[in-house]
Length: 153
Image (cartoon, rainbow, N blue to C red; front, side, top):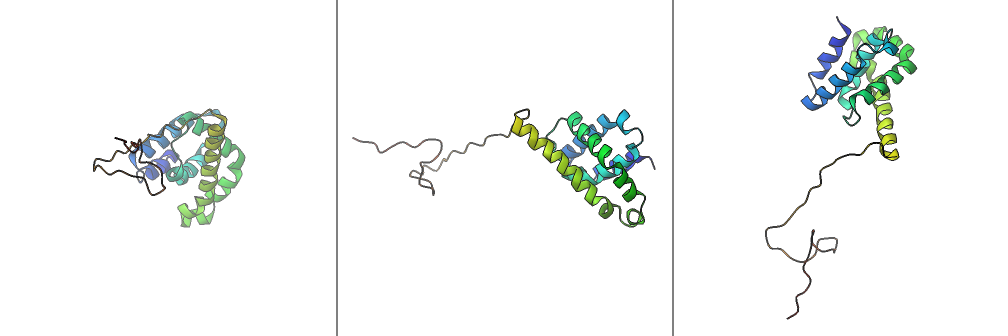
């Protein structure tokens, strides 16, 4: 089996947007000279971690995190990949490595957020009431976005 097929099979179980993101990360990793002898180790780990990788970093940045992870943990991943445990239950065997990769990517996201190199563009939700209710909210403040004060006549 081609090693990329392990990842492709795992991506079938993911929502389309997340699968597309992880596929872009894998494409960025293809042919990376730093993974020349470790590429076959990387795909099972990436497949196991795919469901928990948040699509926040640029795919190239996420790929760099995967490269660093594989350079640091290649021997341990190889030991797991070639063990009897992996043959019996691939998901359980790769779970610790998947969690570590997800943690490394999460740390990179938090570092970039704290340094200001990354901003999340979460949409703002504005709510308006059409039922004509007036008064205050449960917290005691005026209704959002504005409340007319008591009118004096």
